[in-house]
Image (cartoon, rainbow, N blue to C red; front, side, top):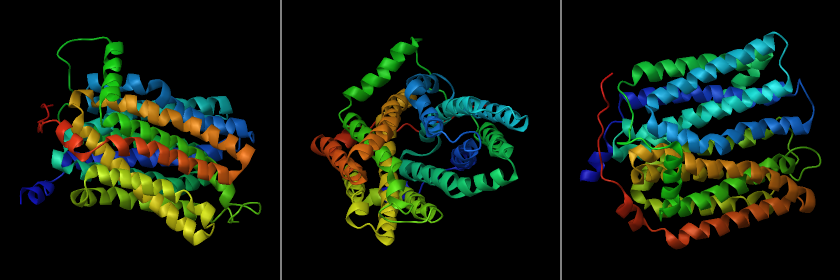
Length: 421
């Protein structure tokens, strides 16, 4: 009888404020992610320069992920979020000035995207590390699920259409509106989440030592290591897959033959499934052991990649895309909640930074590989190859990770009371 009672613990007002700020920040992300490439087409028609924007957006995770993790662990996580959001607002304000004054160029736009990505690394790592300080241990799946749902809704559903409207009003709005949303988000974090959230070490150590500690923890952990390796390979394979997916779906030379205007409707199913998957994680984890649920989601997700090749019809692909979003995000919620229970609060930033450096750093590699394979052997080779690579990667955690290991490695529950302002 104690388990149902525990699951009914409230998430609390501090988490509600965090969720609201996350939604606003991700609405800004959605506007930037959709609006900037469209604006870039007014500056250049070079595929290489357009592709460079995507590389610039992901590069900060590869370069700054480890260092950002140290900062998140050393500093007050709420303060880190506020500073990151403030820097983002200033950066976007400069971008507005460049656009309005007619001085924006592709090199300048690439630098803006690169620096925006740097702020995203710090804001995202600090926000995810802050969640265990805001909610009871028993509600981590619910909190992480709602956070991912808010990110998907605001970035994918709302951000894209808003970006189109902003471009119609003028390119400056594509940067100005996200700047204002960043200011609102930082005000909510600063004023509606009372207390300080710093997990200070008892002794001062070099940043290099702390980075090594985070990496070593991941390398030696019998649960997190196989999950990270498999998850990173899945990220790489899926990025390569979707980098060329539009060529299979859209245009007279494609296999499916969709009109360009209809393609976003199919892809929107990914976001719908992601939102539902994030909300379903908590109730599903009560009925199915977490490890079985996570690996089952990964296996189903990988097999669904074959649907466009085996059944190249719009209804079948739309259903597969919906289930891809559901299983992917459900697995993300479960894996993130497991990590938060097995990693000490003072190491969450470093461990998260080290993990995302690998997981996100392989994504540009996947995109390049997807393009190369498609050029040499065609699109079906990319889809089948991505599926095979995913299944091989999943075999590693399937062979070595067990639910009892997760239970044994969970840290004791420490309900933390934030320090007074």
